[in-house]
Image (cartoon, rainbow, N blue to C red):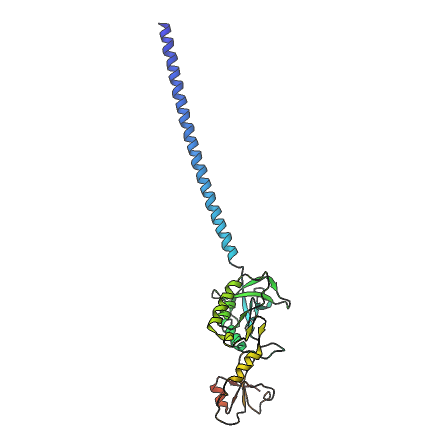
Length: 277
């Protein structure tokens, strides 16, 4: 009887031990599953954060760093004076482009120079705000800032090329960030023969060939006037302003005429204003 009771008790102990082992195993598996889920979730979150970080980094690198400035005045098509936020005035040369001359001390006003200046002035009137992206080498040998200008999200450098008022030029590494885009725009302007590309061989890789422009001007038929001896001189100054000079005017003798008129009214009708002196 005692032996039977002992075996019953022993069997109960074994059953209890088995139940405990099964219970512990199940708890461990639940803990392991929970750990795996948390680990997976952490890994997923980490990957998402890394992706967002990478995207932000790429976006930041693709967009050039810019600052806002106030336009003081346009010197010519590709040169502008600005005032920075700290009140300092800077002369800026637009990167990777070159417009015909209008204010060069040793060169005459070149064809499409006044048009380029006028276009830039209309885009960048004095007192307006412009967004500036400087090049890697910020200044040229004259101390001018080298930059790309943006107005309403559009790059001014590109707009001048689109209109045929500039050529791609002064390409020096490392300032070649937008070179491919600018050259593609120039090819379209060349194909359309607009602006500087309307005069054969005028715009070259070395600059603007004035002799080609002079030949075209000479071949143009003389504009008819209402008299046989027109004396009023029409001239376009370095700012792109059309001004006419009468024989009694102070600067009449030194003015190089671009058009001649018989009467002041003819000059006014052609868009010229009278000289102040």
